[in-house]
Image 1 (spheres, protein in one colour):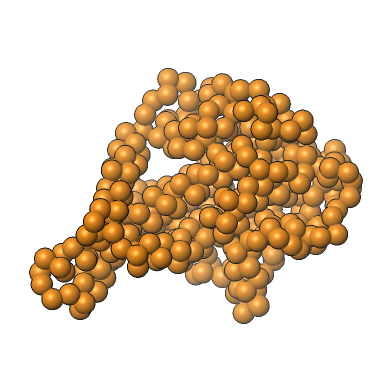
Image 2 (tube, rainbow, N blue to C red):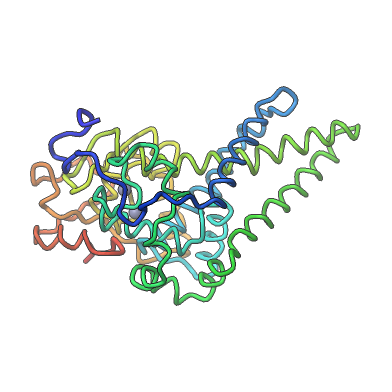
Length: 348
Ligand SMILES: [Zn+2]
Ligand SMILES: [Zn+2]
């Protein structure tokens, strides 16, 4: 693996599992649910259940639940406060994220802020320097004692705790029930479509089952994996625009799949920036969505890209940037700020 990491990256020495995951105690609820989805999802490829329509609908499904829900709400709005949208819209997009079954926003945001503070150090909840499997999915279903402490949430995510809606989602596994409710709604929709478009009861059953598998189960698993690829592949393969402390990479495959989250080295260099694509060809559909929302007056305080000078490879910013990259002159201050919680530091 070390050959994949250039010398500008931090040490690529293998890491131990985080101390706070000692014993590797399995969170059975998460392990069983992840396992079950992976057993059921492949059924969608069986003859009779495979659907080209379902396959194509993965794209808008990913846009709504993955890009608006996870990228925009969980990541750029809630974790990094890269942009402000009306509270009702923030909550709506948050619900889309909840329907991706990636945990409560409070837990997701807290985990991700810890990731930014300790990227690819032992305290990082999911560095691939432990193992690729760990960074991709294993960390999800292994107990990390840091995430079991109320003090952690108070330290990292006070802003979310202060929002009654976020507290409600987190408490009593309400986020799980929101996911179940959305799945039931989709089941009804699929049944309705099948009822209108088929003639026999058998056809109706097959069609509705197929649609449900594609629109809910396969889509959930698909969004899981492309999100997890940001933690695994985008800290493993790709190129680096900036000399960040971590081994983050810009991975175009992950960027295309996730509508922009794969420009991950850019993101680690300027965590608060709303735009993750910094060069004209680093396409970032999630950022375009933010721009569109701003045009129609539904987004403001869009945080610009600002990179500490010390992270630039040659002290220069390329002329080919698609977004304006400001340089943070106070080099030492800039990088030390990057290590603080919230990833909200490199901002004017
Ligand atoms: Zn990262
Ligand atoms: Zn981030």
